[in-house]
Length: 190
Image 1 (cartoon, rainbow, N blue to C red):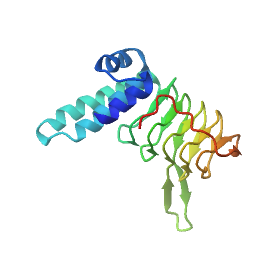
Image 2 (cartoon, rainbow, N blue to C red):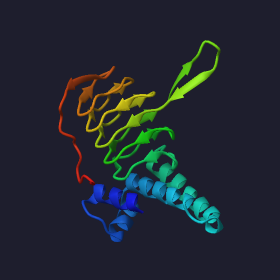
Image 3 (tube, rainbow, N blue to C red):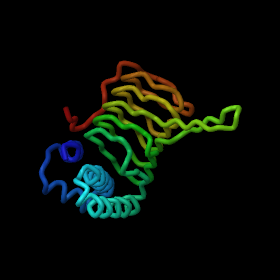
Image 4 (cartoon, rainbow, N blue to C red):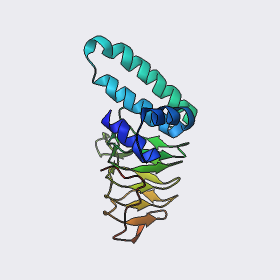
């Protein structure tokens, strides 16, 4: 539950079980993060209790995602300290990798891009979001791109190429408009 404590700290600036309860009851995006962490924790349980706890956790996650209007698979690789701000409309591919202290705003898409080879076979690629990244409203990141540590993606940007660390990008297609930016991470978890 280390990850859940970090996620709670990112949202509230401190951790307590009361804050987890309060967040689950009042913040749809936080509820999605909590149920995702519950699914991941249930996967690690002993086989005798795993089936029931995992089934219940997945039902809760599906319901929480539905209520929040979010598509965020429970099996996405997410490091501690995720913050979903105004979560409605977020879509994340399950093969996306998300680092520590990442902030996603409403309408963000982290999606797959397929490459059709000459023999008709298909290769699928998903994004890697490194630590301390801030992704603004309605930004789209697709394909096998890496968004470098500490970068910021402005709202509405369309990213389909790698972003260097500590960069500010905006536009469609996204262009680096500033380098050596300070990461925008509220309540950063060490």
